[in-house]
Image 1 (spheres, rainbow, N blue to C red):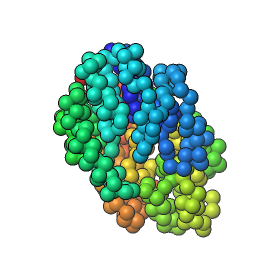
Image 2 (image 1 turned 135 degrees about the horizontal axis):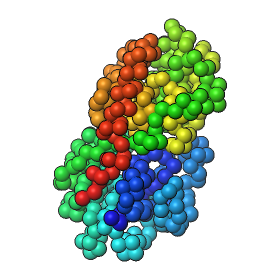
Image 3 (image 1 turned 90 degrees about the horizontal axis):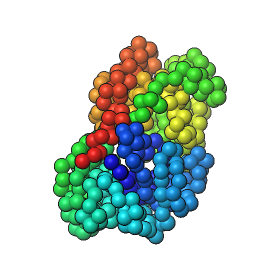
Image 4 (image 1 turned 90 degrees about the vertical axis):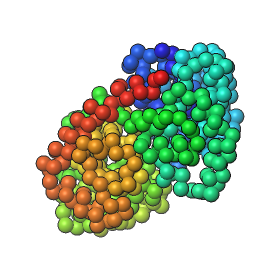
Length: 387
């Protein structure tokens, strides 16, 4: 099948669903290309966080191979609220004559444009989204209500009628698609997966991380990966770690990511009395993350959930999340612990339980790997995007 993936933004070096689905569909024997803007997503504090790893945000226009995927980037006509409207979308569709178009971002300009072109150019259409209800309450919630109200009024009917497959990447995204976007279509929940060939425990990778970042081999490593920002709750993890290390000196906190200097300084100040027990690596490319998960004994995501949870599980690492976790599939094999959201004492208790019980960690890690192999491999999940 000739498949075209359309997205406002596309960063092949970051392990989100888009590049993973593209590669998995290629592995399944399909011809896959990506059509996108000449811009990377406007990540928070871009220049001081992801730029040194993935490059400048404004990319060159044209077609080339990026991380094994054929990508065509078109000039942006305008950009607003993490959405782009780029040129020549219809002419690129005519040129490629796809059997199937997969659009990431159900409320994006690309989705509206592709939906309107479907019957004219006679292709099948799959729409994919991952928004959570919690995200809609962040920032200017009142303006978002207006924006999505207009979206429902003008575009939801057209999109609903055009879709062959409607995919939510998380359970709670179904609510957003139906209520916020107003899409009246059966929704298929396809949980975010991982590349099980890439993400698996590696002893040499674990040793390399400990050597490169001067982490003693005998320490129990508690890890977080992602943006180091308040919304992710890294300060809660630092506060919990401070309580734990006051009683157990054999632990080390590893933060893989970057964020605003003021917030990182706040995290560091929490652990000022425990010099040498905190390592902050900065942003790391997705293809090297299996080394960091392999080095860790426990992973923790205190507030917002993360796609990294699945990658960590694939590397046989148990993890801790909060009890409002939206995607229950990734914890469905008794491979994670949930703490009461923002309850510091409960977070300390859950981390301590895993720190002091190596056999529990081992068994939970094994169950996580089994879950990923059986249920969360992109090679199997990608087929559910097809009509």
